[in-house]
Length: 148
Image (cartoon, rainbow, N blue to C red):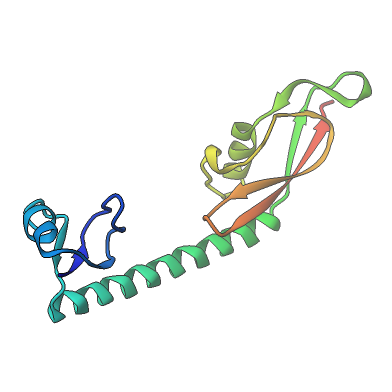
């Protein structure tokens, strides 16, 4: 029996997959619970249409993420902090600080997308990776300067 899965089913497949199962399993388990629909020509055509719409949407999201990554590379951020001897900061620069500085320059990013392994604690120039899409990682240029 050929079915199209509506949801992920453990040990069988993911939602949208066309699977071949034994008739009893499909008729008594998958169909009554709404986990699958029969794989007739109408449903297969609808599945293909949904996949094409989803792939177009994913391509659009990736293109917008690449545009943000390009803009991010062109927008350096300068943060001024109090520093002591040997260029060590009193405190640190965190992902929240970087997100706020980028927001002030017109780039609204979620602080969780800024992949800062540990806070910046020294003066200098840094490249901080920013996860914009699962395939696109931008680089934010951050310059930490001594205040005063």
